[in-house]
Image 1 (cartoon, rainbow, N blue to C red):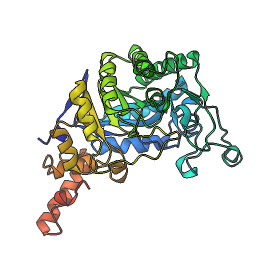
Image 2 (cartoon, rainbow, N blue to C red; image 1 turned 30 degrees about the horizontal axis):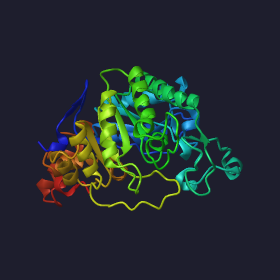
Image 3 (cartoon, helix red, strand yellow; image 1 turned 60 degrees about the horizontal axis):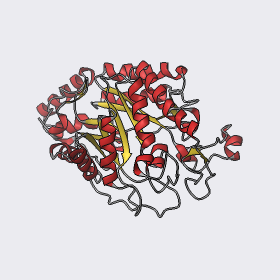
Image 4 (cartoon, one colour; image 1 turned 90 degrees about the vertical axis):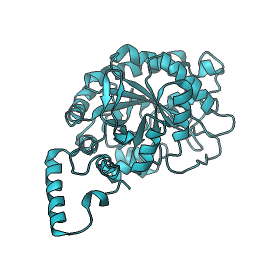
Length: 388
């Protein structure tokens, strides 16, 4: 059995393989409510053989949204549409996961195809979408031309901590089996723990312990509202990749502290802090962030997930086999090919007769393959469907 297709157990939950669908924002919600688009978008990954399917970044409050199109879980009315999605994913053999988020100073942004710039009067005129006030550790804007956020008070911070807990409770009611917290890529929790964006001098800034305080308290708040048997995951930017910023050693220390608060997996990305800093140059290449997940996995003694430029079956399998991570998260390659896990299984000689496919698909495809072999038509279909 290829390492990529070995089951993986976390608490009371077992993933059938090591392939997870990374959260991919769709910007198609209205008032944070999921709709048929989200159902269709996420369901195809379950049919394609992914072990866990995560929703996009889901705002824990209305002001926590990045865009007007973000999903939300700040009120009970948002539970039912998500429950329909989670139920279908589970019925088709995938674990439903949800990523909870607060955008912080990146809030009130246009959708990418509208420019990825701050919402302004033009959006009111064209789309009836007004800007809202962003909150952050300080009043430093996310970037040039961005409005200044409001520096958060103690009560603002405490509300955010409670909002994550309340959203986790709703996620449980909606039937999700996994919660991931978005603490990476310049979102609010990353803004707090990075010394580049958190220059506070109170109990929420300054020292390492003060900067990570909100992250740890969010973990505790979720654990108080999330069943003991269900896993909790944190996605972090393991390094800012900027001199003077957050470093891998900091992430190892944070991962150890999160583990003590009931966190089970660290999803390891990097960069994205924003602010008045030079653009980050990433060392792009196959699975280029897997060294980060390996360091955190080995030093913090916690399960890790690798993400970034993983689109080949052999690469994904090597990440797991070599011990660089326990799980891999794949995003854009799954948009390109939602059946990527099933094709990867064929490429790695785990499935040569469509046995991993749902019979509604696999029966027909296997029949076609037998006919093609009998007639000598074309290449062997299972070997021609590469994971790339």
